[in-house]
Amino acid sequence: PPLRGIGPACAAIAADAAALTTAAASHGVGLIGLGLDPGPARPRCIDSPRYEAMEAYFDAQCTAGRTMMRSTAALQVNVDLGPTAADAAHRWHRAHDAGPLLAAAFANSPLAAGAPSGWRSRRLANWTDVDECRTTAADGNGEPDPVRQWADYALAARVMLIRRDESRFVPILEPLTLADWIANGHELGFPTLDDVSYHFTTLFPPVRPRGWLEMRMIDSLPDPWWRAAVAVTTTLVCDDTAACAAAEAIAPTRGRWLDAARHGLGHPDLADAARDAFDVALEAMVRLGTDATTVMA
Image (cartoon, rainbow, N blue to C red; front, side, top):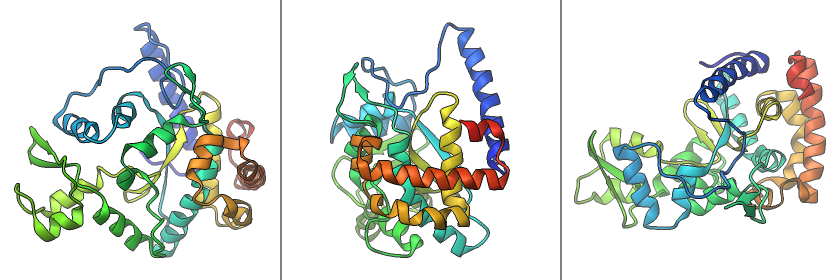
């Protein structure tokens, strides 16, 4: 469940992680925080009509889809939209502005197939390769209104699948955007409101609105560094004072997703922005009374 404050959220996550680690260990399984499994390709674990259709859709375009579905892991930080529409808009823009910086600072997947990949976050690079109409950032069309940005993004994205019933999901292998489906239909019919709502669940940008904001750009991280990612992300997006103080430092890195994935903090612009933004975030955490365990992480 959602929790108020960084400290209670981190405590709940740590308790869940400990329980899962113990349970997995009893079956001889060890857990590791890593953004991309560097080993050989794994079989798909989830056998469901949706996942079969997703895999068929991705297979028609590239191999990156199978890697994404089977071998990637992210730390997803979910933050509230705030009490007003203005707060929601500010947080939407802040999440996108800070996104490349967060991806770079917490990049943790440099290997592919057991060898150096040339990327600091091979996971994020792989996601970008999957299907850019549904995995790139949703704020890049020049439209300032977040609601219109997200609507335009969804309308321009290809339809991945059409559900005939709960046991039959038909992958749409020929290009068909949601806008085209609404305007012209398909041999399987025109979309219902439920179809349109379901289409939104097949979009995977680095910031995704779901009644809250899903921050999906951070690689899976080991203990205790995931705490730092949760705290910094939440602070830079939700705390007005910290967000304003860090805005100038973050601005030069806005939209530089590929630089973040390839270079991480090896890029001087991202390193400078991270140094200043993290100082601001740390000061805000102390001011907000964030627990010592998280601050020290």
